[in-house]
Amino acid sequence: MVEQLRIARAERERYEQAAAPYAAKGYTVLSSHPGWHHATYISLGEVRTAADELVTDTLVAETDPSHWAVLLEDTITYTNTATGESVDEYDIDWDTEGNPNATPDDGLLHADAVTQVIEWEPNYFVASP
Image (cartoon, rainbow, N blue to C red):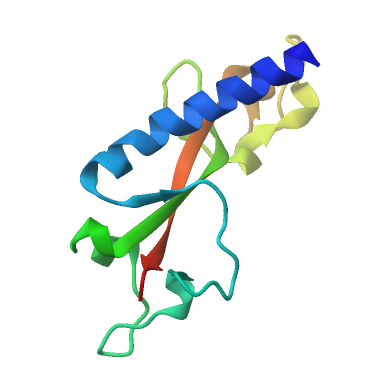
């Protein structure tokens, strides 16, 4: 129970650190998904520009942050431990994990040669449409 509380607190702190720059810019930072038919926050997938194009993250970044809300979702990515380069999870031979003597299949990296990284992916919503 105590360990679960520590983990939850650490996750909350990581989220708050990731969210701080968005809040500082003026975005409303959401702590949970507002739902698909929320009256105040509308997902970008449901919004179009005046030219009937989908709204992109680039467009959001070019406009006033006070018009937007952001929900950060954690995603797992992988990097090559030796080089720091990003690695696609399909380029990792997971059968080698925990076995330093295992040889990865051709074209794949040894699972112990990659580092799992948790990143925060922003998902934008129109705020107060």
